[in-house]
Image (tube, rainbow, N blue to C red; front, side, top):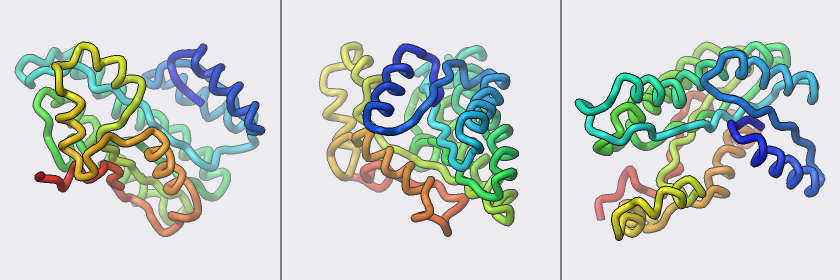
Length: 222
């Protein structure tokens, strides 16, 4: 497991172990190439190889119109969302080739794919880039037994969104929920089920796809 916050990672490790599973955590920054390599090294040394990778890092970055977006903000958002996906695949693919098969899953977004939200230029560009990267990897690796797919979640009821809620205008949550055909936000567990599907043999004939798990926000006009 990978993230920036070691304390939260260690808590999660204990929860997994308490439930009878096995996990290790390596804290770091997904924009760092050395970290991408260290994660694969940790997986192979502790578990004997790498079969599945879920690359889920993301950040909306600066939320401003494109002319007001700083070059630093652009680069930070691209690096966090897209360069991190490239670095992850750069080291995950060779490890999976050694195993003779594998499944790589990325988190993209409906933003930049089916909808363009004002103020999210860098985020939309980065997440659209993740889909492009996914498709190239699928084409390059399919004959070698490795699948690559992307999840495109809709609005999700996450702690990060809760943290931003106090600063949002009144009625923001209801407005966002209303954009979805299901008229609610997704639960983290629902996105996790989508990732598990793409990681597992249940999706063994699926590669190069951008799978919407968005509660119908991409098609809703009501």
